[in-house]
Amino acid sequence: MLLDLLDRAAAERERQALVRSRRLAHSPCSVRQAVAPVSSATPGGACHPQPLLSFSSNDYLGLANHPGIVAAFAEGAMRWGAGSGASHLVSGHALPHRQLEQRLADWYRPYIPRARALLFCSGYMANVGVLTALGSADATLFCETLNHASLIDGARLARAAVQRYPHRDVAALDAALAACNSPLKLIVTDAVFSMDGAIAPLGELLELAERHDAWLIVDDAHGFGVLGRQGRGVPEHLGLASRRLIHIGTLGKAAGVSGAFVAAHETIVEHLINTARTYIFTTASPPAAANALLASLELIEGSEGQQRRHALQQRVGELRAGLVPLLARQVADGRQAWQLADSITAIQPLIVGDNAVALALSRQLEEQAGIRVGAIRPPTVPEGTARLRITLSAEHGQDDVRQLVAALRKAAAGRAAP
Ligand SMILES: Cc1ncc(COP(=O)(O)O)c(C=O)c1O
Image (cartoon, rainbow, N blue to C red):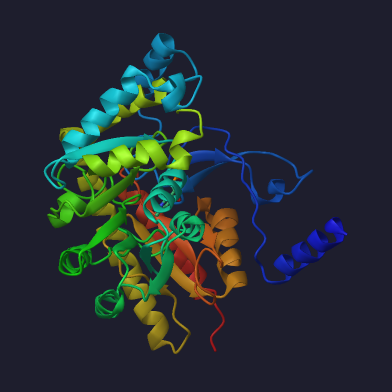
């Protein structure tokens, strides 16, 4: 019975071009990575890794395999061992964890008065932990429509009432807040939308929070390390400052390691330590990872981080300069245009619409040009908006971007006219 059901679900996924499969990396995370080809992703497929030029990771600053950070990880492991051995509240909380929390609290105190920081094992766990711990039965969560799955799941698990507001629609949120008489109102949003690259109107959301006596929970997974002069993410980039800001950052993307943190008013952090189930009931991350992250933070806020952010911005400009005219030509030819999302961040999605088209395009880039870009399909993105999620890294060079633009130009030229 179960297996029949699952077989039917699998056949339906196949029919809709929604099958997901894993790819096997044969070398460390990098923009040039040896990856087993698509055919070997299926069980029993042959496995001959190919070097691919990758535009598909979240390693925006190219730190995942940075020698200084790898060395800090190794030193941390030599000093602290491989694992933490227990949850933070039992016996797993070690000196590098505390140093990292203190460092992160220093980073965010200019934006959140009396801020403390708390580490979680992943961004997913931080989001679920914060929403379930703060989203009590007498609260209402106001959730952006395009929020990440981890925020959606956190809202589902919380006992609070949930209202969704349309993407970046400040007026709709204003009206919803005004009409709500919950004693506790929490606005919940991605800072940089993970599949679009757009930045939420956080200044305006914070203003709404102040006016309606609400709090603003911001998931800065894709801004941390990348935005702001010192890489402190959206608070620095937009100059946000309020005790109503509850800031979540992830440490496995631009920071190059793994984990996440919440920076918030000390009373909130103390509440999370005592009530967030994804904090309490899980083994603490290895202290060695915290040691590596201390090195990563130092690099991010210093001159090397600034140079890397500058290089990343250059690549973003070059990619857009290459693709915008190409897309304009499609419109002039009367073809259904692909759309480049309106984004200034490292996430530069090319929206093609149809699931099968996105998948075929991703395969074509890989097989014909040795370029890897992931095809993102529903339910990760809304129906009819399947896309290539192009992500740029400070590690990419100008020639890498030129290669991608040329391959997309070729693919666009091969599309049948209507
Ligand atoms: C916006 C956003 N939030 C949270 C997460 C989860 O972070 P982590 O990978 O650390 O669990 C992701 C990861 O894809 C994300 O894109």
